[in-house]
Image (cartoon, rainbow, N blue to C red; front, side, top):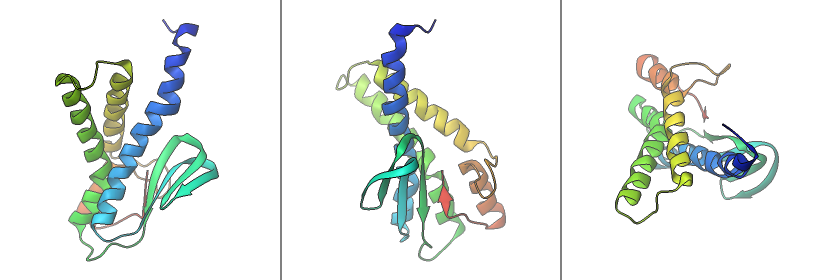
Length: 159
C-alpha cells in the first residue's frame, strides 16, 4: 500500500528515473539520425526552455517527455528510417541488458533505482511498439515503423 513513506521513492522515480529512461529512448532515435547524416534536436520536456547544450534542449517540465526532431537524412531509404524509428526501442532494450549485466556481475548493487529504471524501460518499449497514433502526425514508434516499411511515409519528429 502506498503511504507517505513512499513519497521519496515516488519523487526520485518521477523526477529522475522516468526522465532518464525517456532521455535514453530519445537518444536512441538521435543516434541513428546522426549516423545517417541528419541533424537532430533532442528536446526534454515541455514548457519554457531552461537551457540548451548543443542540440539538447531542456524545458521546465523536463519529466513529461522527450522527443527527437531532425532534418533530412543523407541517401534516404526505408531501412534507415526504420532504424531511426526503432532506435529508442533498441537503446531502451540495450540499457536493460547493461543494467542487469552490471548487477549480475556484482559491479552495481541490487537497488530500487535500477529496478525502476528497467521497469520504465520495459514500459517504454511496450508502448513504443504498439502501432497507434497519439494524435495528428504523432504516431508511436511501432506505427512509424509499419508506415515507413509498408508505404514509405516518413515523419520528422519522434516522441
